[in-house]
Image (tube, rainbow, N blue to C red; front, side):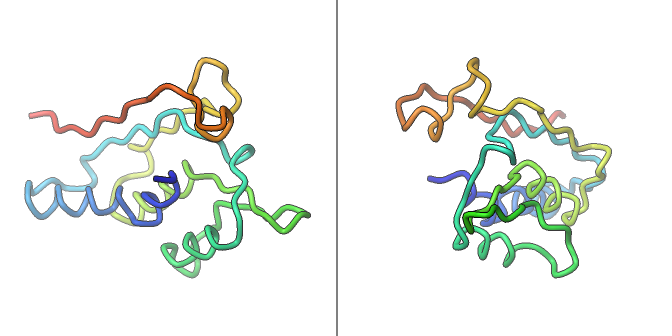
Length: 129
């Protein structure tokens, strides 16, 4: 699955909502680390992706992308996820973004940069009791 599909499918906000409804967790108590991923400077997408991004954003929200001269867009998925989490009630001060770009940092795997010939990375969601 392409990374943007989980984001515009609001996987983060849905997790927040589930924790609220099923565990009684206040979103203000949630801490988020958005780990290494492709950066906004390296993630070029087409207008179909941007249409999906615009549908999940509020009208007045800052757009996490810029249009290039070639008609394509540079999308910052980290900022998009951060905006969606803030809208879900997570405090901005509790959201931390990695500065590592998986497409340009040779220590990382990048499906896009390596034409699908990569290893794997892992994500974790947990609750401390």
